[in-house]
Length: 105
Image (tube, rainbow, N blue to C red; front, side):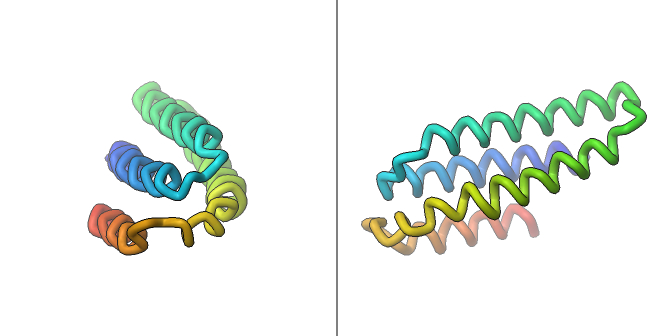
């Protein structure tokens, strides 16, 4: 099921992203961790809705994912980009990105 794959990908991505933020000394890491937990919980709720044949599932999922992309990825994640220059090992960013790409493919 695509949503189960989405959760697995997201959890791997979140761990890598949070490790990078931790290493950079990003001050708002706890807000990111909370947002990541919320995302995972919500996707699991959608899986439950599918199993229960929830009528509005596709529309609800679209609204949730659109909001996640607009609010979290575009706004919240962008806030930590200035901290990436503080990485002791900049290659970690590249490696995490490549690991995430392999999971998608």
